[in-house]
Image 1: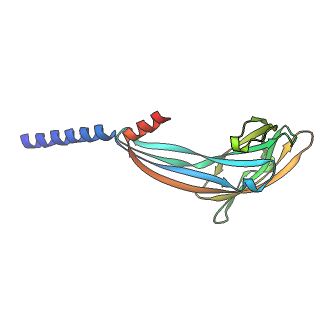
Image 2 (image 1 turned 45 degrees about the vertical axis):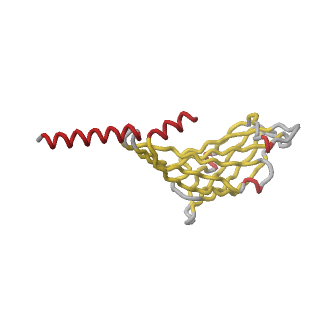
Image 3 (image 1 turned 135 degrees about the vertical axis):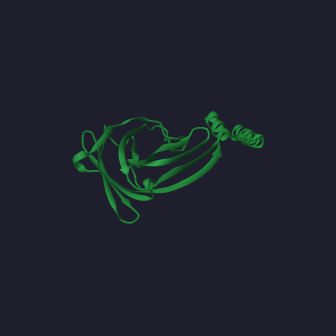
Length: 193
């Protein structure tokens, strides 16, 4: 009986030591998506950002698993400079096409979405002296229902004194990275910002 109690105490002590040294084990998958093809067009520039939502399960500070949750949202950013007149943007249609040919209409003409232009300061390498830039953002919830790379066909127009139509065919390249770390690393990363 005393031997069993001693083993239990040693196991508990080792478990506490292991926890103190690691603060638990944590695993996650991180989705990265890059939009390609926007440089092939003139004004307006259309960028698309995929915004996954993550969910975490497990026992905090012991073992957790974080992963992305479908469906993903998309954020469409339309930028232009002062050479192109207009007050804002309307996206009339957004068609998502997966690698196997399946398509999903994320925006249809009956439910077009838009937003006004606001002043925008591009990254230093994209700035042009004497030009002012504007950006309109359109959020599309529940646009991507499957994991993997896909193509997008976007039709819209810049509204104002007259409508200026545009069409963009873009590709979103998808990758998923799996990571495993200890709790101290999570604390260090959150402290680093």
